Image (cartoon, rainbow, N blue to C red; front, side, top):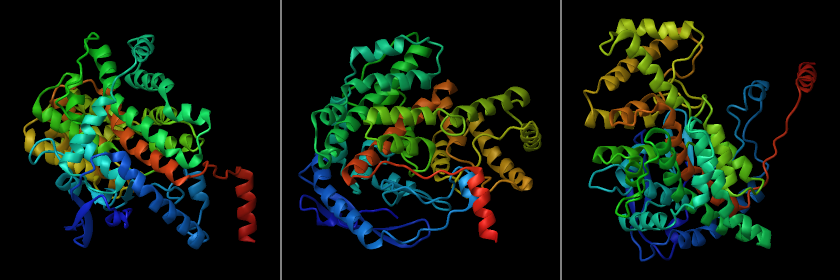
Length: 473
């Protein structure tokens, strides 16, 4: 589990140890901030970074030759699946337990992170603070970060003009990624690098770019939504709202439950360790010292693929195709027939399975709990519940699937659809806004720790064949 052991030494923070059970009922000790005179996130990072730099140097000097495993031909031919080859501090994915953000599970984040309303869903700002510092912030610190992000959210006019140059029919992700690239001209990292900044200071302009980018994304994303689906009638930011609440507001949804959903959605989609396509792409491109805008735009283009972030669009479209053909009151037997029809047609059932997880995705579970609380009678939610019962046994019967259980994408579209955000083609943009928090948090630490250019070794099939012949001799 990734967690800063040294944070209790921070002189500026007074902490208390809180005893929390994890999912396997063992005991862990978490450092929870109870109060702090310092509401500035950047200054806390400035204290933390030297400690973590020393920690990395010690790991490399004392344990650099320790083997982490063996590489097989299957791994090389299977997209490097299962290889341990990246340092990613902000989150860790366990096949059985699911994602942990700096050591905290999703249920623990829901319990411990500050919320915008009493007993509400966690604020994304709180998770951003956690990912960057390894500490759970106070409500005052999360509110302070909300205010700072609002102050950084101004968008230059040329960004909107660049988006407007595209056909309105262009996919929302194309328009969103274009907007991010248009933001790049303001990069503080690029300016500092051109002036000759010392590499030990790389993290500082990276921090500025990252917070600016995170702050500006909801405005760019909502502009794309309003341009495509609402005749270009945009809605300005509300200075009284937090990050997730404002995003929902600028999209045009002021239902308090929708704001809560957006807080939950953004929080749980932020990070999923470093090996997934968008996170790895952002890390890879940034390793060439590309600035956060260039790196994140590249990550978005990976996220737009149907085997990654576009899956949340595909799930809702598939569910609606079930309803169109069979009606909302479909029986489990009818649903089984439709699932087999999909599989026999050479397609997959979208929203089921995962490259790492071997149990139901905790991100699915928390969305299901949200639905049970707020929309238990929604017909599409009831259909999703039936799918949870029907699909896994069928996939297990096929005998080819390591994980037949639903993932995060199996549920999010139904929740968004319930509150009026029915345009499935837009859903991946929401995922993109969320993912920036995780990618940018890790990018700041990439710069702070001086991680090198990523350059794995590749081989040909002939090389593999010859190597295997020699190994068998």
